[in-house]
Length: 336
Length: 103
Image 1: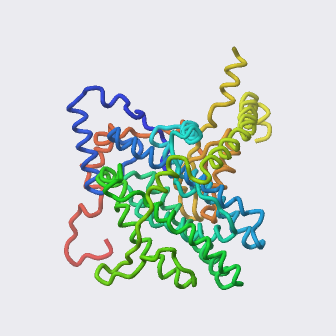
Image 2: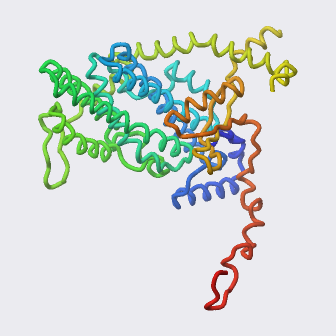
Image 3: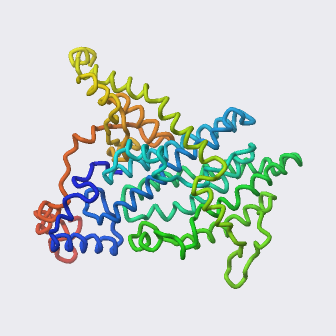
């Protein structure tokens, strides 16, 4: 993630009416994309490409840090020290993923503060999945298995995204996500093989998280606002529907091994397609959650804002300390 | 006036540091990303927490991002051109008679 900032911000001095130059730059950009080369921070890029990446990477980063909340909810109540240590490591990883991604977004000429402002004021979004509550301990397992599983399915192709810093961040993220998915699966397996009450708790969590996980892939390609252009720019490599199908096909045998069922009466193997058919997704629920009417939208954002505001004095104190030390270099030299 | 500007500075974003990790002995430091921190010591700590949670490194460098001088992509072709027409710098440029070994 090279963070040397571009000399021109979005809509900078490139488009200043020098038509021939811009056409040449556009041609060089198009050639790099079609040759499957990576675009790097200081390269010329179309304003739309830059804006799309900022929107997508920011939303991705916001999702990682908002995603800390539903799971952190269970840290103090983890059933054993082993589970608690695992969950803390996982939540810390989510913070780390957010930071890798903010770092990648900053290479496009936006500041970290600006991105956080936009999250706090609702001008940039995060994944709807985190607006659902974690009602029981089994939800921690369902999130690891299904939510992180869906995220991996989405993110593995992003490791080949045309924008270098984003692709490199995704390589790191994907390496760490597989631990997340496995710990969730193991947690559910322990519950599923436990007492009848524990088994029921695991089944209930899977029943609640299955459909929202399928919605994580976004609306059907035909209705997806950004899909076609993102594919042309090689930001995205696969359509929403293709990735969703891939995820369903992966999950069905995993659910069987868990001894749990997936809450879809229409789920069945289609010999002809070599894939599982599955039922209609309730997109009106997706739209409602997206609009801010999910069970936890308000709670997630207000908690995020509060954490930011309550941490302000720490950031200010550290900055003041750094300034004071920089202003008195003689003391510093003495200690070196 | 100084009060306001101080307050403003206090709220301004922490500076950006580029992070380089030596993944194991015998290898060079490699750029991995960036962190924000108020000073070098905290930049190192933040970089450790962010980029070496799984023993990915044995040594870390942090460099203020605004202290890096980079070649401009606009000058790319002419800037790197001197290297392009000097094929004689590569061993494959030279013809070696059949049967000559260890050369």
